[in-house]
Length: 374
Image 1 (cartoon, rainbow, N blue to C red):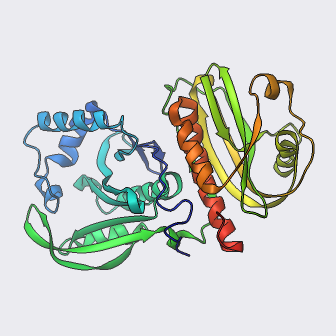
Image 2: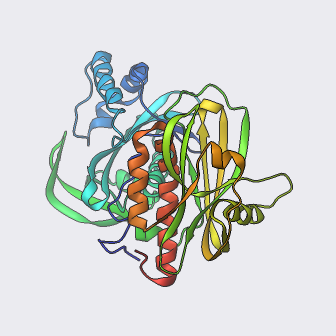
């Protein structure tokens, strides 16, 4: 299923920036200027690594430091995606993977990557590319991810294939690298290729407050609720606490109580916060995120629920007096716009990064089962 170009979610990006991603053997993270020695010695000074690239090998580590200073300054931009590949076994930075071109009008990106020769042939580059593609599809909300390589560098094409891309064709004399003009092989993956994937599993870091330690996990249930008209229901909170003063949009939900199963918990929470009786359609997935300010790790279990009826709400005293909870009834477009509007605060940005990918997946599930939801 390819989303129509005017569908909610198509072309709407969740600009979450370069967040930490962990794979079996790698930590994908933001570069630091202190990575210059690793970058210079492991790949940037090696003409064999840069042979098919568009930039020449670095003449000195000072060149590498200067480039990293520029890259680090760009992390303030939430549409900048550039990861250092840290090898867990040694702690060394062994390569780089990034979005080299972002096309917001069609929610698309072109990827680039390179890695030290000593680490070739071990499956590390496909491991990194697949993880970054998951992040860009599921968290950022891209519809297309592409990459290309010199026709004389088929090993790079195998990386793309292993990560789930498909070859589209060859563009003759369409590129230029350190060897000169070249034929370019195009590969891509689109969101429709991933439709039959299982539940979402997303891991996010808190990029608003520094990490010190985590002293507790919280098991949470949340729901994307919709009705027969295709409208969605959220809670609006007005709060002023340790996180600061903020007006927020968030899915209804809360903590799972001792001895309570998740489905019972979500039914209870929806009665309390929305006054709603629901049919649980399916589990959408789990989003792991952190609130570093209060040293908490959140395990957010998301469900898709269809409203059956409304009755009285049963809000707690804190929900009434401290959070001033109220109900929001919105279209998919309106909800996405409201999340973006509430990015003005740090907590609003954390919530949007967590919930926009879930809303997007919920819309896809609903479209598949009953047609377009507006």
